[in-house]
Length: 472
Image (cartoon, rainbow, N blue to C red; front, side, top):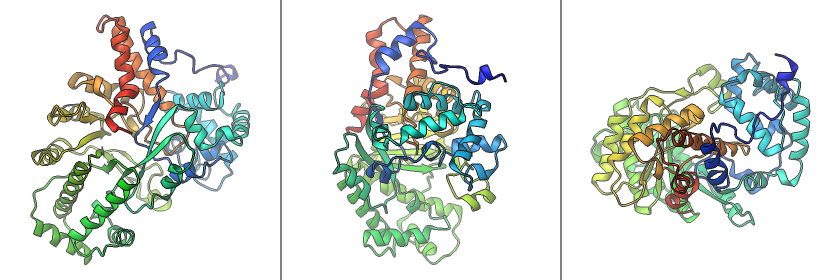
C-alpha cells in the first residue's frame, strides 16, 4: 500500500452507508437525532459510579475488547501485545498495524467511526498514524469532557441497562442513582450461574448465593426462595429486566420429586446425566420466568453461543477473552415447548429472543409470532443481531427475516451488548443500515415515497418502540 492510501482523509463521510437520496433523508431527518436507549450492555457500573477517566486510548479502547484481540491473533500478533505485559503504547501500535488488514471486517468501520465521533479524528489508523492518533486521543481522555459519564451523555444516550448476577450488591447502581448523572442507569438480573447445575463451579456459586440471600440452600425449594429474595432486592433497586445467556433453551418433562433428587445428587457431588441437568434447568427456568411475569418484567434470551472452545487458552486467560464462536444447536422444538408451557399458564411475559446463528433467523422470526397474543404491541421480539452478527450483513439479515415474517414496524431496535464506553456509534451504524434498506426500497418503488409514514417507522424502530416497550 502507498502512504497516500494509508493516510487518506474523511473515510467516514456524511452519507456513509447511505446509497441514495431517500436513505440519506431518512437518516439525517428522522433517525440521526433520536436518543439512544441501550437496553442491554455490559458496561462496568463501578466505572460509571466513579465517573472514571481513562489513562490512555489503549485502556478504554483495546483492553477487554475480544473482537480486536481475535483480529490481532489472526494477523499474527503475539499475545504479549494483546493481553500480555507489553506497554499500553506498544499494544496500541500492534492494533494500529492490524487495522488496515481488517478491511471488510466490521472492525474497520467501527474503528474509524469511533475515532471520528468521540475524538474528531478523521485519518485512517495504521502504523504511520498510530503515534499521532494515540497521543491526540490520550490527551483528550485526560479532560473532564471525556470521563465515562460524559462519553455516554455526549452520544445522546437516555438509558443504560447493565447486566448483573443475583449475588451482586448493586451498590454502584445505588451510587449512580443518588448522583447528579442525568442518564438513567438500570440493571438486568442474569441468574445463569444458578441454572447451570452441570458446571464445575456450581456448588461454590450456591455458597455465595446462600450468603448474600441469608438463606441456607439445602433443597430445591430453598434455592428458589433465595433467588426470589434476590429478585425482590433487584426489583427494589429499579430492575425490570432479566437476561439469560444459554446455548439453547432446554425443555424436558419432570416431577417435583425428580428435581429434588437431582438437586441433592449435585449437592453431594454425584455425577448428573445430561437429561438430569436439562430437567433441572427446565424447572428452574420455568420458576424464574413465572416470577418475571408476576413482576411484569421483561425477559431476554441470548441463544446460540459455543463458548470457551480453546481449552488451552481458556485455562490461561479465562472466559470472555476471545475463544467463543457460533454454535449449531437445535433451537426450535425445545424453545417452542418452553414458551408454550409458560403461555399455557398465562405466565409468559414480554420476551426478547437473540439469535447467534444466522441459519436460525427465520426460526426466531416465526417463533415470536406463535406467542404474540394481541395484549401488548410487539410482546415477543426477535432481538437485533448480536455478537458476531452485529455488523452490516448480520443486521440486514435479521431485519429482512423480521420484515418478511413479522412486523419490523414493532421492532425495538439496536443495543450495544458491549463493555466499551466507545461503542455507542454502533447505534448510528445500525440506523444507517436500517435507513439504507428502507431508502433502497423507496427508490425501487417497493415502498411509497411517504416520508411521514416511513420516517415515523424509522423513528419508532430507533427509539419510540423501545421507550414504550421498556417503560424506563
